[in-house]
Length: 234
Image 1 (cartoon, helix red, strand yellow):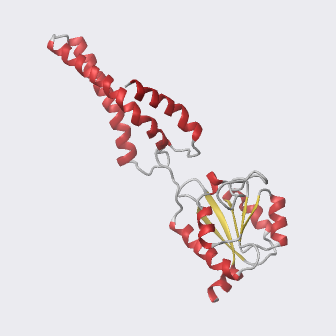
Image 2 (cartoon, one colour; image 1 turned 90 degrees about the horizontal axis):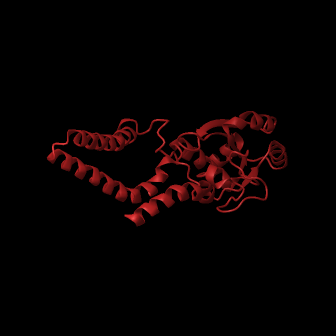
């Protein structure tokens, strides 16, 4: 029991510091070892309750029963609410929205079709919500993307062999668009106006608004209609 208690205590401190996943379910790693000392404590309360009942100690019996009801209720009520009553509620902290909706897959099918027929930059990703500061990238390519915030774009880019560049700020965005008109531009929805202004005069772009993940990461995607038409006719 002492080992499990130590394991659980270290997990409570360690997992939030070590992981880049900001989701409530990560603390399951601490709950698992803490179940052991919790079970021992609950068994002690139950045993005390039975002893109080046998000795006709009404106060001890009531206190023990109240503690059992309180502990069991504290476990069952939140679990039932999170898992069965409101499993996909916006405020459910146990839910980690990590995968895009199907509409995102359809858009990347278009990007994947554009890539073999397009010269230069196929995809430009803009804004510090998705892009790391120049010179600070690393990890999974394209390294200019923030691994924790931009996933799963990395996977689609790799699967379709899409030539990808990044623009951290608005000046870089304009420079790259003027130098090599990208077929597709992706940015956080808050950057919609800046992208629209930068693409003004660069051709006809179809604007799409998608969820990078099911909740909380809404992006705008601008697709060059001529590049898409060329890909479809290839």
